[in-house]
Image (cartoon, rainbow, N blue to C red; front, top):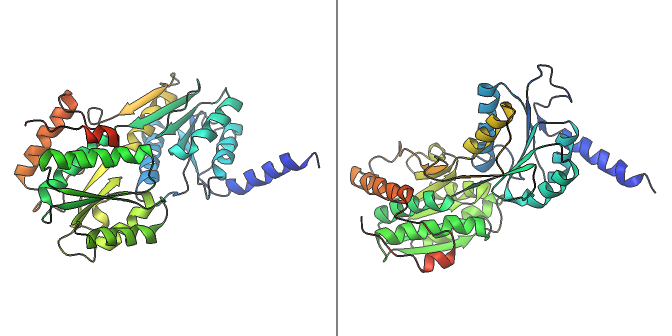
Length: 341
């Protein structure tokens, strides 16, 4: 039937609108800039990637006096529908939270050249899209160095979500940081195959602990919450959290968190939108820009000694100064050479 495709699209869009947090109408009553956000399937409450992005949106609402809306995605099929809903409502800036939306952002941005979009963790080459990426390998390098200085078993581990280039930046940086401190430290690597499977995250963390690891760096989104559950049952073991500050989820069991300041990326682009200025084509945030880094060890000060902090400070300065380049791929990791401190 000729009318079926548009009718189906309308029905799907209406269904998705029901997931909206604080939705506004087509016109802002205050005349303020309106900023919308589309989560990935992990959604709000992941205590990691999506929550970090949402924190930036909340700050934009408070500090920049913009109107905000969040559409949560129940599945990947919702990504393009959610962005289309916001584009049709003429939002001034539309954030897509996650690399899995790259193709959808490309297609929607082409259909709505008068709207502006931003995507986190992917590069989309469109004139009305800002790509926000991070130097995850830099913060991960510090995490690996701390793990190597702290391990008692000389075995640490990395647990990723999906084995893709983005996650290999975390893996490579972490392994290189450990090698910088002690090349004899063994680094175990596993991937969950998902960012949502909490049960598998817990199971695989258990496997890595049973293989001798006493510290696991977990970059697996919501699946990482399973690994945190696992470490609670292990004496003398630690998890290194990721994206958001996860230290308080299991006080004393999270050695630190490698915070990826998605909130800063969201807020910076929102600031440009609020000022009605052109947005950058590509925004990259590393240690120098405050885009990545470790938390303050407030629950692990007895373990993270002043001597370890001094080493971390030297490494951080070397990365920012350019004398140390953290590897971002397995190939770069293979050729990584330690530097004198």
